[in-house]
Each structure stands twice: as structure tokens, then as C-alpha cells.
Length: 219
Ligand SMILES: [Zn+2]
Image 1 (cartoon, rainbow, N blue to C red):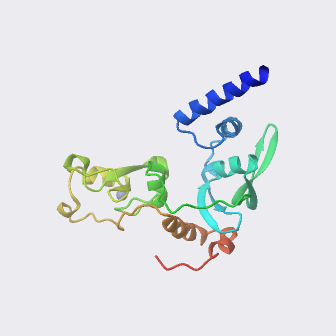
Image 2 (cartoon, rainbow, N blue to C red):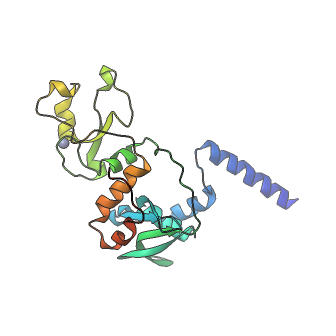
Image 3 (cartoon, rainbow, N blue to C red):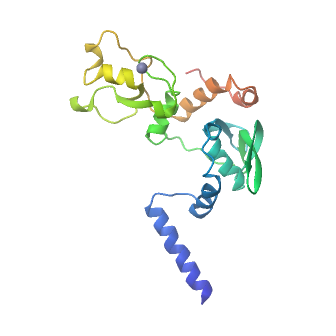
């Protein structure tokens, strides 16, 4: 009887989580999020290279997310950052590279359109003046302003500093001689991700050995 009740409750909770938009093992993630949640230092946002079980680089995530994957037993740390996270009941070496323990098929699809992914695609740099800022100091700019029919799409959203955002206002780019896009905004595919991995990885020696896993056509 007890078992059937709790199994029913679990099912209800799973349904609730599904409705809330959580996809993978919500219970575990929440538990670990609470435990790691107190650490909000910049170190928790340091980019971590994610490898598939086959050592193929497949993603970049923040150190916080990487720690969750390691503590859940989904991934293991292959390279460490050097920093150690000290907590009441655990000391964890901050990862620099993690590897998934189970091979994951990567579907050929683009990433979700989100502020976070736009900033990642644009490497936290204003696409007009090139200044690199923290995520909190950047805004998103509609290249064709919304007031003039511009849509919220990968091709029409770019990372932008507040100064450039103000200067641009509701104008179209061709009306502004002094403002130009640094590059054409594109959707964020796995290929884009790999390109970014290499950009970031060239500065991090612990990433480099994993980044040329397979030959690919140049971007
Ligand atoms: Zn700017």
C-alpha cells in the first residue's frame, strides 16, 4: 500500500516537473542544485569543456553545471581547474574538462534560442564595438528593431553593450554609418559550438589535447 502511494506521488511529481519544463531527473538535479546553490562566485561560471564518452568534445557548460553532472555520477572530471570548492561536507576539485560516462548521441539540431546561448555564441562581446563584458553587463540587441518589424531570432539578436544599445536606438544599421556588426549573426549549431570551444580552448592548455578529436571543414 505504502509503495503504491509513493509511486503514485512520484508519478505526480514527475508530471508536475514535466509541466514545469524540466526534462532530466528533476529530483536529483534539484537536490544538488540546493547543495551547490550557495556558491555563486565567478569560478562557478568558468567554462568547462564537456566530452562525450568517446572523448569527443561536444559542449561547453559552466563549472556549476559541470559539478552537478560529476556529483550526479553522469560525468567524471578529466582535467581540473586548480581551484577546490570547499563546502561543509565536501571538497571538490573544480573541473576544467569533464567526460560523460555514457555515450550520448548528439542530434543535429540547433540550441535553444536564449539569452544565455546568444551571449555564448557572441563570446560575451558586444557585436558592434567588440568590448568583452560579463553577462550581466551585456544586453541583447535586435539588429532590426522590434519596432520596425524585427523578430527575436538567432539572425536578428546579438550581444550588445549598453552604450551601443543606446546609440543604436530604433535605427536600422544602414542608417548609422559608424555602427557595423562584427560578424553575421547565425544560429548556434554544434559546429558553432566547436568553433567556440577552439577559440576558448586555445587559451586553456588543459583543453587543447581534446579539441582536435576529428577533422572538420573550416568555418
Ligand atoms: Zn558596444
